[in-house]
Image 1: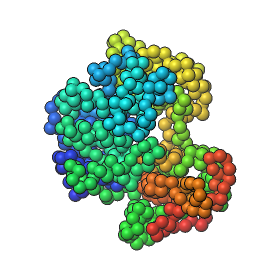
Image 2: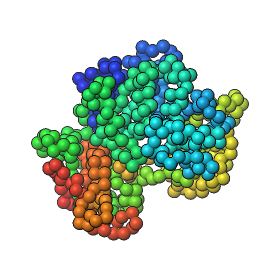
Image 3: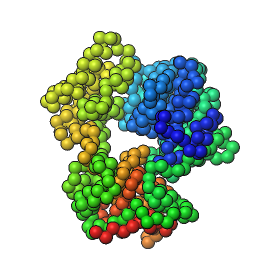
Length: 542
């Protein structure tokens, strides 16, 4: 923190003590601003108080907490984590029993995992369309799920807001414990997260929202940038600050990205253009082959020492796999978790245990902390620590049994039959186990654009720039011959996010053919975003 000297925009945002919105462009130092604001505020609090800091991912949360705790700074009783973790740990589990009966071993579950009699209690209104006004309609369903020991994840926001509204003890706890709430990536908020934020503000907590509407890419998950825009509007009760200087990307990359969004954005003349474009002859397989030569060339030219500072970003996972299979370089392909079909609480736990085994930078303490909620005895905690150690040190043949032992202690019961069966298959499959390995320093990173959100790389190779892919198209009846895009703004945001992950150089890639998700080869017409608003990437002829 001592090395961070804020510019004028950043300093104004740091010094503001009122409810506020920070509109933060990529690479603008928002994490440094947030950590400085949090440290300033926490230093004035009593020992039993703290702040709430909500991040979109565990990784982002860990980074913010790390910066806030730098130089042994005491964050007191602050909360750092995701919105789901906050809702469960600080509101639902401690206070929902005051309002309705709850099964002895309450745990989270997806709707599809709930018993059929409980699902039959759902009202006609879809959960994704529900508002605070619909809560009474959902109460029989929520009561039925909780009585069976389940907290439905899809309804967690609604349940959390209901508990805060109805529990005076919960309100008093939040007001006594916390003095401010910070929510990052606010453009990806859902309705009930927004409503909870406003409720915390109404309880007297200083409310700080941080986001960028141009980085909204999760509309498919019912996340909406309009909530951020509402807070940033005049007379919203929030002071709005913009921090816009991109300290991450080369100026030519930043100008290129902003010109995509705004045809009037000035582009500074340069003899050092760092955005390139390549049309590969062939499909994604040929793209992989071309990258085998291109990546070492660009690494040498821009003095990138570690291959893990290089990313290949794709719109779809099938393209990422095709490129990975023909890359011919050491790489790490980010894929979906092999525990997708496992009950949610077990999926998260199994993943945590395997990451502990394969990532020497991790410790068992976060898992031990979660176990404290089970009120384990000192003897049980010691047994848990030993079980976690075995997960890290056992042989491959012993891994399944060690995982089951540790999971049983952490769950308070044996894993489900489905969970145990999938876990056994994963433990026997070296390919699936690689999903939990930390990427090595000499591995090129390959992932979808959505997974790249919040990350940065020296070199970015932005693939899948095809018509029909980004932006995607719709074909409503009676519109033959018309070009109708689906969520064009979201697609543009995704393209913008991909380009702004780059620090030193960005290469846009298309090809003459493309293989779609069904394995069919199609003509690879270039994306309509290529050349948008006069953006001019430097062609690569070799």
